[in-house]
Length: 242
Image 1 (tube, helix red, strand yellow):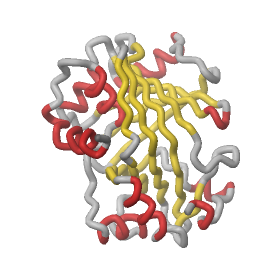
Image 2 (cartoon, rainbow, N blue to C red):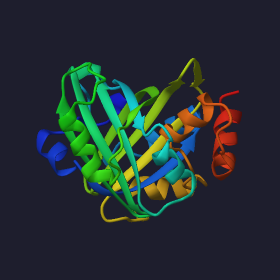
Image 3 (cartoon, rainbow, N blue to C red):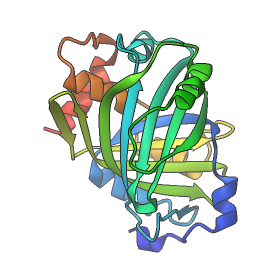
């Protein structure tokens, strides 16, 4: 299916970086994702990673020992953050990223380079993180996620569409696979319901839903977490994954 998409050119990649954006997430079974892709090939280009169309992503999430960032998401705080080191094996690249949800329609992501494969946060990294999340306490590793990603860039719409599959979460001595789930995210600015992907999702009866990979990792691997706020989305993901 991806072979029918044009390959994203360099100038399009730069124009669709979208560090400041609106995010909309959807949870799909693989067959529905394939059917959706069939409707998008004339309006989006696929972005390979070193010629790989399904590159591997491995992400280590950080939080305070008390899980302040997780609980901010659980409580639905208007401004909430995620701190992670994301490894891109196909590109031999690692980035420390802070993703801030500033409102229901606005997300900002900032990043800085870190040595490839390193999971450590230096004192300079800690200052970088603290200045953005407003918490001076040290953040520590809490959970891993691993998945493969399809990335599409809008040819005529300011959008970046990602489809994450083969998701696996790890934390402590526990892990959980979500192989029968595709998490689709539409990243755009400004927010619009009338782009090709949003219209295709609406026609197929799909609606935005909860799909935080970090919160899913904590909820799935740390016993006793209060997860009532996530229960509908969590049960859907668990049901789809068997």
